Image (cartoon, rainbow, N blue to C red; front, side, top):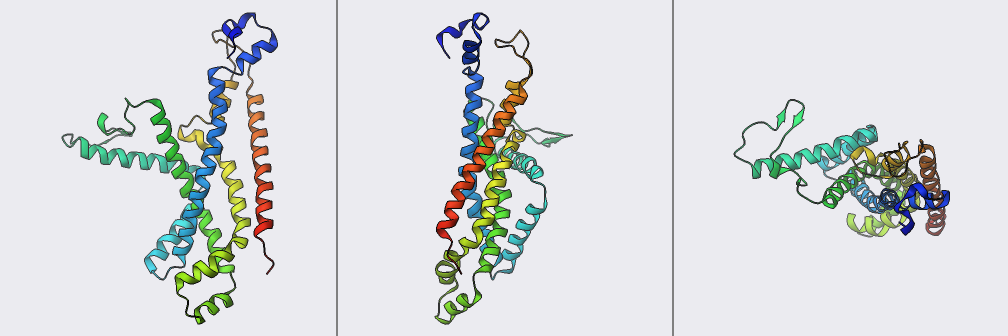
Length: 280
């Protein structure tokens, strides 16, 4: 903030807005845009890797591995994303705390489920109540990354599976006739060629991932949606910067941000597509 921001009541319109838009909460609002970008760049490769492994597992010779991989891909794709974003973090969090409760507080024999409440000893909490806020923020962010990876890994698995099946079977049979092992066929024939078939589906998944990031606020993370609602709501005279309901302007800024993000993504993906496409 600027030096003249000590008394907003006596400022001109321009100075008032310059102080208002650079206060502490607005700086957190601006940082939340970076949080979205960070989530995308961490989640996208993890989901792609998980999807690739699941797709290979679906084509595995081992029956149990095939069944598990198919069940994962089909079940996750068939359930609304919002349910997983609410279910997975709560489940993982309670599972970790329940395990820590049994280890750190063995003297407590009461059930951790008391009616609709989940109660563990203080030492089993993760993060601990005494931990600084940044540890709580990182923990919540990691749960969000895990949730997005599980959901979009299932969609990526279906995309990779279709791309692998699109590689001409004649080339695979040729590799077998040359005595190539299953591993060599994947590395030398299937993986290099599947990308041109997988890229359109992966591009769509990237766009869907971008559109899903506003759901972060459901996980208790102070993302762009949280701050748009918090800052845009009407503020009375008890606040340092009182103003009427400005939520429409804040959400308009989110609209511009997501449109720019999708447009930039579209341009980059189109360039990648042109570089890797080889006519069949």
